[in-house]
Image 1 (spheres, rainbow, N blue to C red):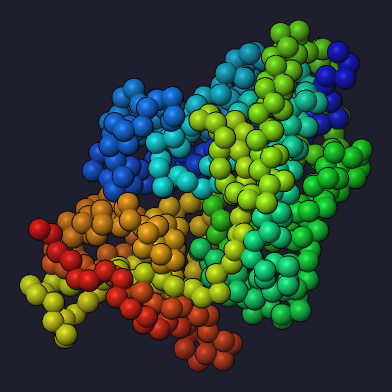
Image 2: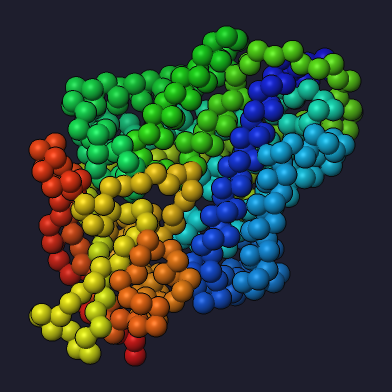
Length: 467
């Protein structure tokens, strides 16, 4: 079938696949380095406890069949190795069928992690990586030009990401309709980056322009992805510029980067594609069958988008083949942070010395400037932001965190920037207090070097010790 492939997108496919492999590599590296404290046998939310109550059909995973910390580590590092091989172009050195199988390996491994990841993996970009990764496995390799069906379905994912996010904003917080959300967002976002302070202090009229431009990019431009070239390329390029602006303004894990990967599917990059034979019949049948399945499954996210009760970041099947997305349907006006402290005193007294635990990414010491971590994902730091919004968000795991701090658990301390206690001297008590954080102004920044000012609000967790 002459229409089946698009030789003009040869270079676009190459860039997309290599970029996707890089995102996979970051995701597996994040899992390998953090899982013991979060999901391990002695973690805050152990996988064996989860698999004991959730059947395989609801959460298909290799870890439903067997779990040990060694096995999880082996799967995570195997994912890193396969991702690195794909980044180096290993799929192009294989027959077409073997290249497809190789691309499905990281998808299956990461699906196994996400489906037992519980709260730690309840982020939209997990499902987005899985949905993109599954579809991209059928893009082919050097033996065939990229299939039109797969390229358009990748654009369909991008459309749902952007248009869904735009709709949830219009239906959600009134500040999006009033163009005032960015008066607060850069200060109250989950994990500010090194430039977030400066973004917050941009002139308010510019913030209004930013919000208006965001509405155009998310509600109008996505329709242009399905128009003829060069309009589709211009639309995708505008989306990429918008995502890079978001990369500069905060730490959003790999959400922005996987969105950029999807946008590459609409770029017709100038290149002279090599001469390749027509796609084999079995490949055409396979791609059309996968495409038909995904189009059929797409009715659920479409119904969700047009519903007045639209929800964000939900998967409609246990394989995460088709999902719904969205972000910041509401924007916090005030930033709260949970500050965790410990003391060596046998009994807490009014004059006890309480030492603060330093987290890697979330605000703590007002003088410590935020760092850039994305696309690497600090899962505990992100969940601490939710914990500050309401203790209910932390009900499953916060007690486990405190318990492990009281034990000076090595894996848990590895998630932090610094522990105030020596490895052989755990604290007697740990407490948590809630503070309100505000960005300082230009003058205070020059005088004190502090980018934050904080005010004590209330006790979050009273002094607690091991039984």
